[in-house]
Image (cartoon, rainbow, N blue to C red; front, side, top):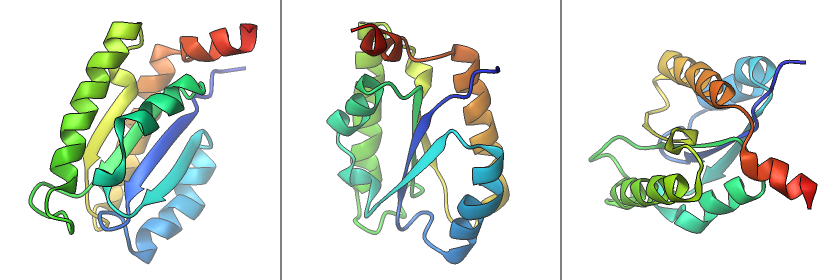
Amino acid sequence: MKFQPQIITFYCDHSLQDHIFEEMVDGNVKSQLPGLKFIRVPCSGKIESHHILRAFEQGVDGVCVFACHSGCCHFLTGNIRLKKRVEYVKSLLEHIGLEADRLFLINIASVEGERFSEITKKLITTIGDLGPNPLKLKVRDN
């Protein structure tokens, strides 16, 4: 059986808010990419470093955060704060032996449905090529 990566996908309520996104997630994307779990947050700036690290610790193979485009955050600087956190977490991942490429930050708007579909497919491919999260294997061994 081919490896099916498990990916947590946080998305800002304002960057991907309308019914078009909900229809894509409920239909096309979920059926093609069953390893993605979508978590809506009020602002990407609310995602703290420990949320991302905890996901990896629990064994997910990748984490992706969809945030508003620069200058378009409804909370002014949430996406800027998130960008700094993602850079910090990537450095921590490298330090503990996980590939930084397991963590994605994507700036997007709900009107970019085609781009969203392309990104999610690339995400699955990239994480799939990296293979299972080695922390998942250690958790199962204990």
